[in-house]
Length: 341
Ligand code: DAH
Image 1 (cartoon, rainbow, N blue to C red):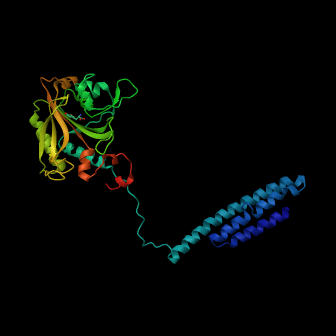
Image 2: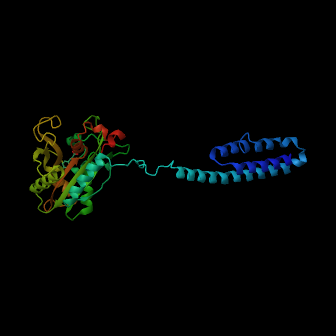
């Protein structure tokens, strides 16, 4: 049987030498080394030998198998290279074909608008100040002039955590206090972008998470006129220099006096449409002069310092800008939506 094995080896190597293409190589591989190939078959017959010659045969059979496997691999590399060369020579690869496009990633529409807003405030001399998404009740409410049970807390439906006194921030305003603690006693001009969370019914107009950009300026002799001038200038840079703005009275516990700024509806140029509910105006932010109690909580003496603050949404202006009808698209992760931006 050993002789048979040697013969088989010689024939297999000869056969391999004659192989010229991938198909023939596959056939050779199956009939020689495959599960039902001759090497396997002869190895299985080891039981027919007398006991004492079995180890020698087994050893030789393994050597042959390894040798043939190595020869096969060498041949496979050579055949592949040959075939590639032949394809190139016969023009099967058309090098003048345009390449396959690679899909590009893109920025989320919120991120695009957020960056645009940050760029404008940067041009106007405001630094970006980051603060945390998970806040204490103290920062989210108390230091902003809303002690426990203050009725104004109802304006912000809050996600409470299992840890007593720890909430998901309902607005970026608590960052104002962190910024004051960090900057004190220097003057401040910062914006605070970031995600906010509210325990609300999700609808076409409101989501449980959304971005805000807060702003804070603290210094000496800052007046309401500075607030109006700065915010109007911002609106002009974001929506175009011609845009009309107006300030309406409003109430926020952390500012006094407080206001909301509207811009002329950019969809109907103020004539009145469904988006602006026929008023011709779109509300884009809340603002006001920082409340003396809040300045004090930040470490600034309200007899010496004044300041203004504001807070604006990001998704609402993005909806107006891109004509997005439903806020739920933003976090649904639907690529058909995201790929449009
Ligand atoms: N935090 C307010 C909100 O989420 C927005 C706001 C209003 C921020 C007035 C301010 C401000 O800084 O002065 O509705």
